[in-house]
Image (cartoon, rainbow, N blue to C red; front, top):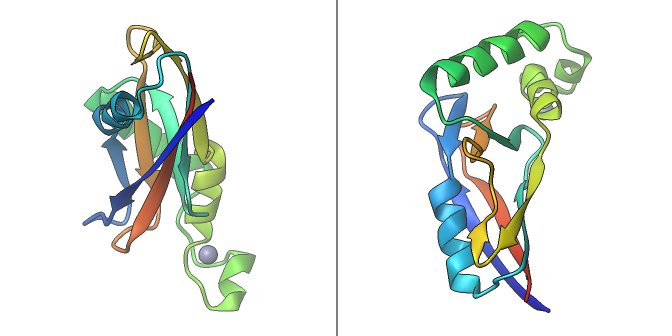
Length: 137
Ligand code: ZN
């Protein structure tokens, strides 16, 4: 079995951001030479996530509003007793989850028509990483 690992680096200008990363993952799969297998794409942080959904700006705004509704920014999280202020960022990351696995068939991401990969940042303006691990033959 072949295994190929790379890291994507992010430092968003905004506190929250949703970044389309399908082209970067496709390029890493191409470089790996894997034709049949899978790729793991995983945020290496507790306040960021990776998800698969539609690349459509209105939907991204809806997802952001939905997350803010379920895990609103507020001052009185227990987590803030440690001196932190990002309780909502942790909860938003839990809702999105931190990783996805995408099948590779004939050397390509084997996606449905509208599926794309996104990095979701919930506590940005600092250095963050995503691991991309391609496994297969
Ligand atoms: Zn925290």
